[in-house]
Length: 464
Image (cartoon, rainbow, N blue to C red; front, side, top):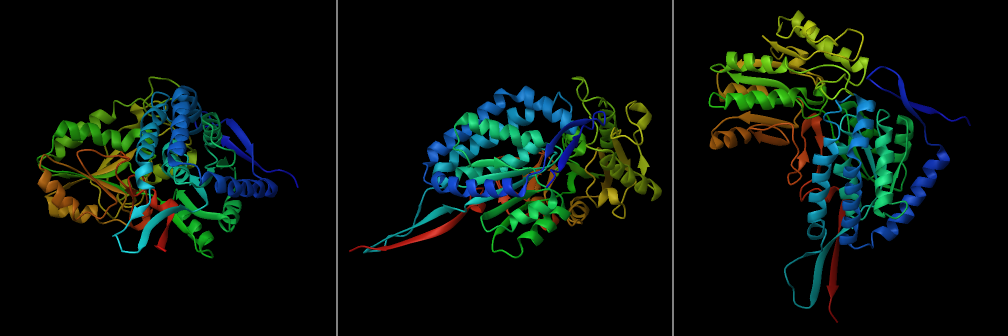
């Protein structure tokens, strides 16, 4: 049987960056067999030793952050000025936190004493965990599952998006350098049909998926014939509300970054903003002024702050949402001519800020995944809460205010997985990363982050 090739086209210039052979049936079978046998030994490894290995893998990645960042820029188009920080900051922070709490969180749970008995609960690993990771934050989205699963005593097979194959391969290098036993971590380059076949294999104990809503439905269908759980981290249409008492300068600075970082290609990017009418004009003016300071261009140039989208198709989807909003009466406040690199038919797209928008428009309703945001005035908290909840997504939401009590009261009514006050677009590893509705189910990170990768086993021992 002839081999099949997966190609990675760099959005920087449309050239072939790398290509990889898709896994054969034989290599898939070999990986599943090795993962199963390796896990049987790995589960008996002390948690402290597991954590030490994961920390060493993180150190290897951080030590090679410039190289890995350069590769990431060439694969997805993120500005080279930012790419290494995915490893130096979030990636390293999350591994450190989960390693630090692993021993306590994976320890046996004692129950109330009962005369004549010893009773406790043990967290057993699930076996082989399949991690399906996206291209937009390939290190950060994958580490949420890869490291907690390994810490919990599982083996992991990573399948990463075709746009970022080198990330999976670098993971393997890092774990090899850290001394992880063979087979505890592996990667496979697979197509969609092969993923479904692997999910259907009885040796897979859990599937952790990060990606689109459509992809989440496909994972559910593939797992539907088996009694295994799936963790789904899907899309978002994350709202922000700027109250009348907000620190205007801080809100503008952080919300522009939350909307435009990584060219808006983030599940938790800020995609719709509601501003109290008293601040609306000043907020919009400041937001537009700061957005115009971005420099769009070749992301290998250290002075560039806004790179191309991952593909022409992705950019055209954003253009389509903008055009649909304009046709319905929205106003665009950014002249694309101010961004020389922005050209139709390419992945280079100028950022855009839209006003006179409403919820009949896709830009305020469906995930955009690009550097475009709609801003609406509101008369107060009630209107803002209603509009923030008017979505079939529910990943994150933020409020910008100087009143903690008001923020908590609003947060209690916002239907979301994470609620922020005066920040956005950030994952704190001490807090559960979770979504509701079409943003997915389950959670990663925090003290709850080991639960998806373990099952409870009860020990009920009568003393002689």
